[in-house]
Image 1 (cartoon, helix red, strand yellow):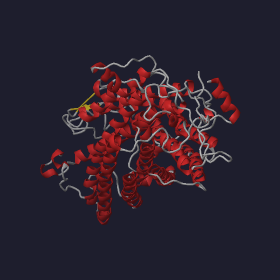
Image 2 (cartoon, rainbow, N blue to C red):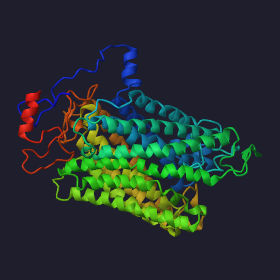
Image 3 (cartoon, rainbow, N blue to C red):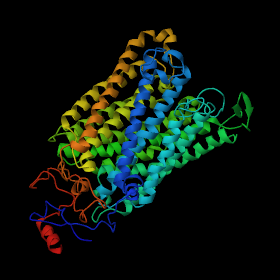
Image 4 (cartoon, rainbow, N blue to C red):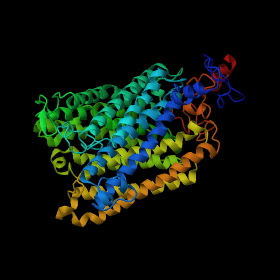
Length: 609
């Protein structure tokens, strides 16, 4: 391996040695296009495929959410534009269609947006670049991890058009509602396609997790020890561990529920399946078994959906605060602690199932313990910002917003950890407010921060900062107007999942608040048009970025923008930690990880080259 090349100033420039492109001679034609841009094995292309696919589904999930909000705010009134899609004359929403809407909204946003955009898009694009590798450990497996998402895309999408409509059993798919193959809408082929889609998403994620763990363990650049890894990589690594251990449980449960529906087995059906109002199948199953298997995965999945955002936000905050990350090792240990505790708290989703009180208290205490490593992360983020020379870029605004949204979502979660409180608020909008603050207000802010931050590395150009800030402020205002109000509704017992709560006299006076939330939701979705235009325009017309537009110090910022095949035009050697900003005595406010530790080492590296 050759050391980083140096020019007149060895500690400044390391990027001008051409490395052969791994023996791939350029060629043209359709086969070249397919292998380069469609069935590509290059981790960067696969990451962008995940990114574009998930952004499209993000639009679909947002439109489904607007339809849900419209029905809650103005029950049975015609829905503009979308009314023609609904079953009832005049554009009114059928009650069964409402249950399909909130089921598929949650399904799309969790399984087709949040998980694949974090682990699939950013994990694929960033991991090799940030550890100094030329690609993933298993490029073919990496390609398959993306293409296994397509059967899921097709299954979930097609479920809207089959007889009976899409799944309507909630995104949790609890039996016996989800296993009764009856004639009622949402319980036929739509539910079966839902289970097929879920299974393919699980297989895709498992393929990715194996690749991520292997790549991070075995393919780091010389000098890149585990405790020189950026927090983004630590978060991706621990997320991959969560996926590897939790996903097989959900995938097996999905096969079991499919067998109940298709082959009349009795894993989860207590009284046999109901087909055309006739009972068949063996029965004797346990509906609660599905809940245990589902939540054994789906609570760790909460951290699969938030840990990568935590890691990326940590890197962004340090860059624009121009300070080292406060408490690097405690941050690593806290992520590991969150992941470990995440495996022993799934029962708090089942407090209303009638579990033994002693077991309920055990889950309650372990749930409260998760607040400790979460608090470590929060205080360390604040410690990083304290006294920093903060640069209020669009990416930094979204990153700081992530911290505040995560705090609100985390604090509301403490209420639900207490069993007696959860029994009251479980089926209210307080729960809806909590998980939207964690999984949308939190995660989405982290995703937008990451897009604005790594966009120059992906496309070689920067996004427009003015319109980026407009996008941030409008999103922040409308988002909080939508979701914070849900806490108030939940505190007075406003029920979730009902198409019309206003036939209860208790809730008549809450209609103006629901209308306000819906208008905010419409504004939030409309604001994303600004982001979409900025994103597409900047891909082709944005200012050329160069290698390191943010003066960051990670390895990815020493590669060309965008990186070519093989990523680096030299062999990176790591001499430093990931957050050496504002180092006393340094001649600049950031030291790259490839900067030799002193002048003697720099001279030796130059002489060796």
